[in-house]
Image (cartoon, rainbow, N blue to C red; front, top):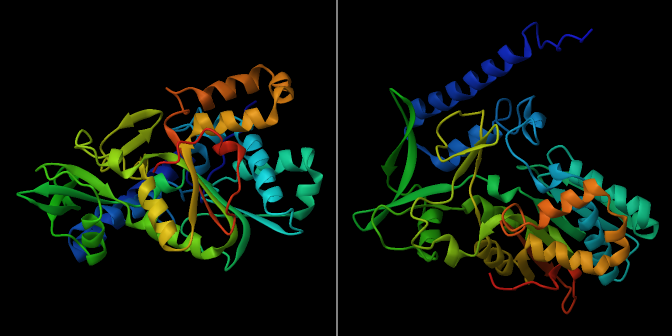
Length: 369
């Protein structure tokens, strides 16, 4: 006989989740009522990261990835992705001279599955590396260690950091802010909310076409600044979907890159299903590389996931491919296929104090960002 679903505070799970969504939406409405139009960056922050009711922070957040959730990631496809990353981290450790202490810090760890997959391979296959390894995880926002010697990595974190939304109107840039209307939340154009946003706009290759709408990723730049300050020596490896700035702000992307996911359906309305859908924006990798460079990080390489994985497979050689079963082979096809994850996801590797190092995952890198 099936066991009844656990109840929360005497309320069924479904009613509890519906109540939390209502509370989230009410808190956003209250803040708009108190302070006026809300920047989209603040709206996205509350929708995704509200301490109690956000999409990523609510009690049911762990159920939102995978077949029964809203979207897939390279991690949810299976353990192979983490095992391949583990090979790259082992190579990094060797490139650093096999130090007795090596910190591996994952940012945006969520359920911790990627770190588990990485550690599983290292403990099985590289006991020498495992003896030196100290693994830590952090979610956003959160404090970073003061000094990291080793590697800092993230997978699909930066695309979910809050973004500002801007629109060109009568020859000037305005900010799209959120207000409450009879139909729910809606956008309204307002003056730019900060000097930081104004300064960032002057550095972007934006088309001067009225009606052009796009995102500016101030929080991603702040995140990269913090990461760069935390890294004493070693590498930063960022995996996400996105573009170099020239492509990101191309004239044909006149509606920006915002995407929302609910039950594996894609939409372009970030103001709907607040608290029930994921909200993402493609990553401007040029901005990340530039911010890293301004804070002492050098770029080692930039490539897509297909080329990155291919480089690691070549390093592993025929024995790995021969050992792959049907399940792992299917995972590999998903990671490599250009119409699935292979070309959509990009890999940016930056370093501090590791000049001249060659990494297998960057063997086929284009190195332009």
